Image 1 (cartoon, rainbow, N blue to C red):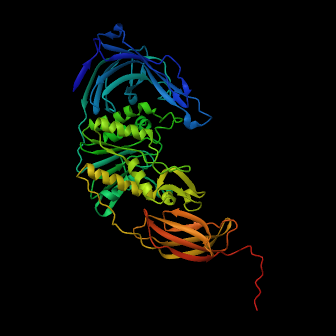
Image 2: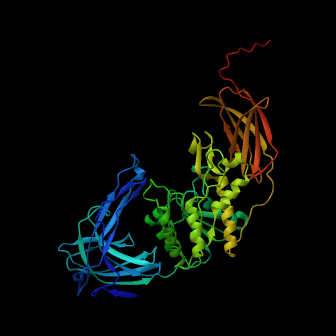
Image 3: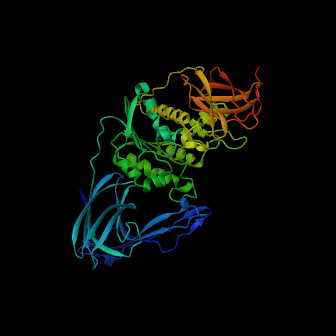
Length: 527
């Protein structure tokens, strides 16, 4: 264990302050207070060690246009701090501290801006405080702040004396089989059945890395997030820790990255995909300005690599094309460009999913791209009874297609992973196509069902009148469709259902339906 004593001036000690108010909302983004740093006064050192005088300042910004999601809550740690250069790993720390106030106080130890341990000191009391930390940069920056009221509330100044700080690396975990960890956002996370058809590519990665596409999954006990899953099978163990609404900043500040780092063993692979939420200027708890994005990537990459694990950067998926003349995947997101450049300059493995997914989308018929995204008409899914037309998130087809791309690239990067592709083959025509009339909220409606087509990953349902006039065309990802009559349409319609696998269509099947008219006032005269 390495020990640093503080009875003499220490070169990495300083006093931090935030004297000026936050600039607030500037050009659509919230700007926090700016720190000033000064040397520690010589009289702060004494025979017992370095006297810390500190406080916590917590502030909440005004909401932008009344939107509570735009509130920025920030804790500023004001006063004395010390920094110990160290590899970004896990450590056990022991702080030898002495109560220097006239009253007993409760303090929190803060390492790299994160609350890590709480303890109480009486006047003149000396204690050794031990705690574990997972670093996310190559420094142990330590300070202590008093606790008054809520644990993150603004406080008055408190004082204690740090006699020494000892630290040693935590023992590295050992894994019996390869592990893949995923730190990412909503386009990757695992979803519950009731959230259908929304899906993330992380929940399908096992399909292409396990022999026979067979595996089991359970909640990841190392995570408090209900969506976190562990997949096991004939291949690497996959820990999908992706969570919606997160970016590099919020995933770290919420301690999710720390927990992931604490689970790593040497040679584990960590897939890191962010960028979608990081660019949300009006969400200050996750926004990262473009010119700071590379430094945040570096924190993640260095923290994984210093632990002997293998970081892999993944660019964020493309969005749904909007507007005339906009090609799928044509616009290259600037955050993805920063990711590419950082990976090239630092020799970090990169899976350019944005480019690969864009190429995949461009290979599909333009009118079928809806199959990839979270898009459905009304009454198709209980979670989306009013329908949904999402431009960011993906459904079953997109998640599985993107997982295939990621798995293929992983197998190219690391020979110990085997890529198990699906059987090739054109989709077969749908079988057992049936139609049933039902009474819905707006009158007569139609339920179409058919058997899932082998090799198909989506379907197209076209509705026409008996003369062939097209009423509607729906792209769906399940073998069934609930149809609502359109105003003015004929009661005599033809449904044509086509199974698709990516850009290849099977022969269509059709069924004729006469929709009953419950409000028909015409009397039928029988002989």
